[in-house]
Amino acid sequence: MNAPASTSRLKLISYTTLFASIGFGIVGQLLMKQTMSHKTGEFLTWSFIQQLALALTTYSLGVINWILALRFVKLSIAYPLTSLNYVGILLGSYYFFGEKITLIRVIGVVLIFIGVLFVALPYEGKGQRAAKLKQ
Image (cartoon, rainbow, N blue to C red; front, side, top):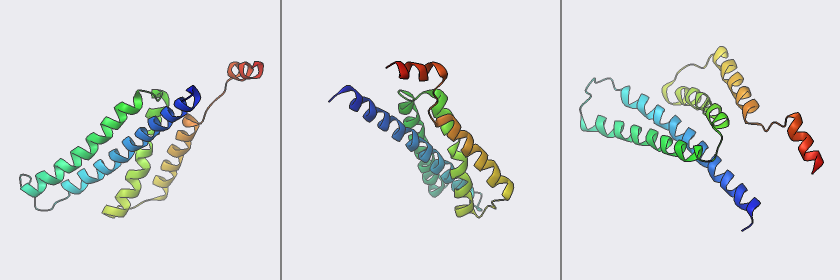
């Protein structure tokens, strides 16, 4: 296998683990909310402990994927991408818990998403562009 193919495969795996981390984080948070939304107030029942264990395990899978992603993804790119959690939590809260999505929340999430795009898009400064032209 040649070096460029190996590098692109490694990049794909790294970003896959990063997005898996974001997904597990969203699902873990929603499961924690669902677990804590019981009206009974009984926190030490077997059902409660099982649901909480599932929520924490799911969230922990997100942390493990995050650690793996950081091995190859720049922190200055990876961390802002975790802001996509806001989008997932907003939509999940609406769908699963009936929380309202107001216009101001939509605007806020859109601004966050645009900011994430600015951070994630590749940037070529003058020096990088000049180096490419010389090649």
